[in-house]
Image (cartoon, rainbow, N blue to C red; front, side):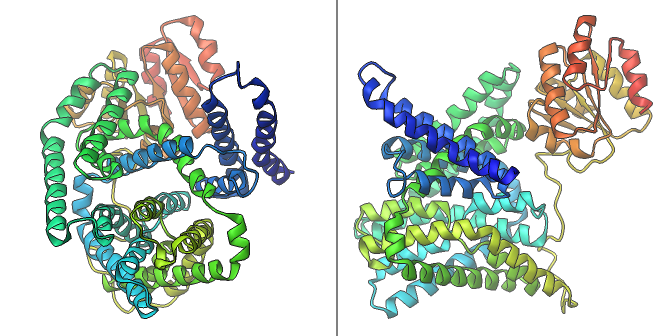
Length: 575
């Protein structure tokens, strides 16, 4: 029954959009703006697809791909404004890179330097060299051969990280090796964007490459300077307002302004957004920024992956099925071998290398961005023109959809490898367990008490918890409050504690209790509602000065609602 409901929800947007299309012509003269119909379709398709994908056990991104194919011009044709979808998808790429930049701070990049620059560098170079050599042997020109190698060397950061998160493997050797390679690929896109015009004969040769690299280096140096000296102070001032609206607007402004300025200097919008994320990550408000941006990033990323699906021509797929399936097999095997060899050369066991290779065997989202840039300059995959482009798009969409299957294959190969004693231990630089996330300093706690808010009531409670040696962590939006907590040596996480992501980073799933001591009743209710959804069994204690709020707070999920601060302290310490 649930399966039938999920399929019904997946198809519902397409039924509704058919009705919208049927009535749009009659109401066009006096109706809403033309873009509203397409925007409504985008939201309907994205929302229903995400829910149906969850019910069917699919990664939502893969559901978006399928929905894009179904809604595209070669199928139902209900989304027919490529300009609108293209603009939304470009913003999606920017926000995706921005959140990646926040997660991968400069310190984190330094900690896994070898995984990134040795492992990732080997994977990209091996893939580009292998593809170029094979295509040259078949008579493809050098520029098109290298361009195709660029496209195939990239994997999908979005899909792989989602799969790792859903399967709890981010901190495993496979997860760490995969993330290191993915980070290098994201950084390598920068150089590839600079090289593509030169491959097409429009970059000024070696001199142009040197100038472009110097320009990119100057931009990165300026960003590093801002990251250390300016942006943390700026965000400190903004965060002191304790206004989520001002913080969100400021963060978005930083993202878009950095991306725009770098684009004026000849560097891609995507790289500018990534650098903006690094700027934010160097402040202590990175986690708060991540939580604020994530809902927007998910929305626009949905537009991006829908736009990828829209590009697939089902007619071409059907008439060239053997060619497309052959490309899928060649791409997957070549990429799996290159990634596995790179990981193995780092000293990881063969089992980890095989699992990582198959996890990274798809082609990435930024390959589409790169392919569009090359196509505009006359380059094409394998030098086959439109046939090469359509084969590349079809094979890439299928590989993205097959990623969970390939990841499972990799896990099984890894399990087989682990069944035999490993001949040698992995080197010290290859992490064997998850490192504590400095942006989420409470996530490693277990059986702890979370205190949301840091006013007078919270200070008294925290003193009692510390005196009784009860493990706890403080959540606060106030930089001044966080400074006071840190001054006493207590663990603190800065951000909006009504956000599910921040509560997850605070270890809500393994917490003993959550104590909500916010001065605003509406905020208290929001926090309780979100926490209760995330952990139905959690003990939630709330404080209010208004007896009339007790029923409301209990209604949204509070276990205990107390009006006396001393009673709160006694109750929590007695848990």
